[in-house]
Length: 122
Image (cartoon, rainbow, N blue to C red):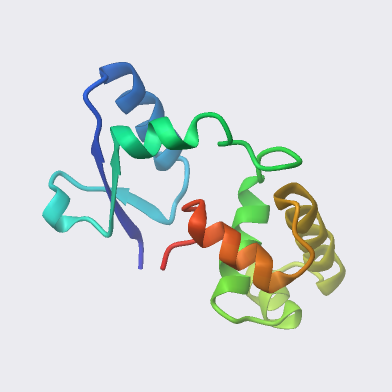
C-alpha cells in the first residue's frame, strides 16, 4: 500500500522539487486533495524541516530507507533479506549505515526518529 501525499505548497518551485523527490519513491503516491491523503506536506512542514532536513550523517539512500521501513514493520534481518533478495550481511550493513546517519544506537530509536522525520509512514 502506497503512502498517499498531498502537497499544500504555495511556491511552485518548492512544490516541483518536493514532488520530484516523492515521485522517486515507489512507495509514495501524490494525490489531488488533502482529504485523499495520508500525509499533507504544508509550508510549515517544509520550513520547519529545512535547517535539519539532512540526517546526522547525511541523507539515507533509497535502499537504507527501504530497510528502515521494513524494520518499522517489525521484520527481522533474515526476513528483510528475503524480502529484498539480499544477504543478511548486507541488511546489517544497511542498518548500520541507517543508525550512523540518523545518529541513533538501536533499531527502535531509528524507527522512532524515522516516524518523527516523516521517513517512515505510520
